[in-house]
Length: 358
Image 1 (cartoon, rainbow, N blue to C red):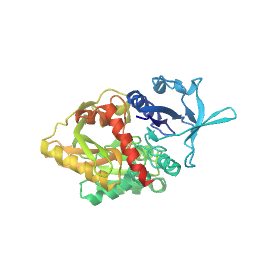
Image 2: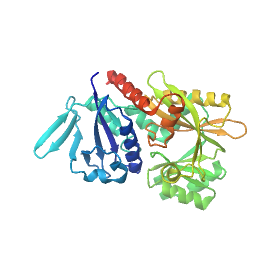
Image 3: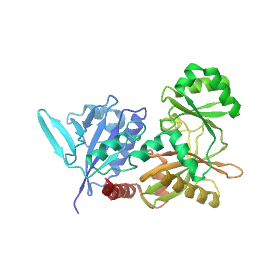
Image 4: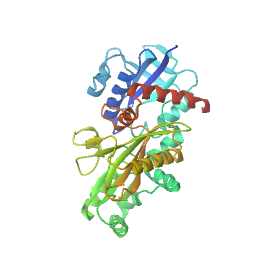
């Protein structure tokens, strides 16, 4: 069987750069070398593209990958048929790429930007295509589209940076007239809980809004939902499948960026500690939201499930969830009978299947 040439993109100009390095390390360590020729391409925080010349992927999380002597400047050409270009002095080396796995979290990687480049280049890629990536990355767009499915979601209010800067007191009055404390404040265009805060009063609300507008000009204020944090992994194109449900006990005020990736206070429960009926409702809702958003390949869909009444509330969708050794997405499918390496094979297969629409 002929090996596929797979380019794994990692890093990126994003607040989630470091997490991407850890995800990519895990992905490349699980790709079967009998099936794939791997071309690891890292994007620095400054936006430089580097074809990593080493074979030890543990160099990624430490940052030492940037200084490997075998590195070459690289680029994916938007011209169809050129593939991956790397540069040795005055010479250009061209590699045919069969599929790209953009292990890029957050902005400039998960928001449709890289997907647009790959679409122009005519190279199949793992994950959602341009429109779905952009819509899922924008929490306002997600709210509007998911709201059409009939799946319940937390009530929300949009605040813009311009409104906050020009009339902060009016913004606070408007939010307080609509919600009781506590409330959640989220930047609209970031992932993995970047720019998310929980506010218990007016002063904290102002601080949370000022923090959130640092990351995006649009900010969501959401009602507080008291429930378990339940996540579902979804896989596939036209007929997607949902994994078992998993639950996160953050061990903190809420499941923020630090709790996800830096501290070890959170505990994962697979399956989630909810009834079989509630789990099935969550799984069905996850597929419904996934399809409404136009997703393909993969996504993780997050919910709250009430502690007592088990009422389900959609929270958000993530089109390139973490793939680190502790990440929920691969763990959920492992618990569903699909081990990590096979999961990667399936994702690549779905990417190749979707190429016929490119």
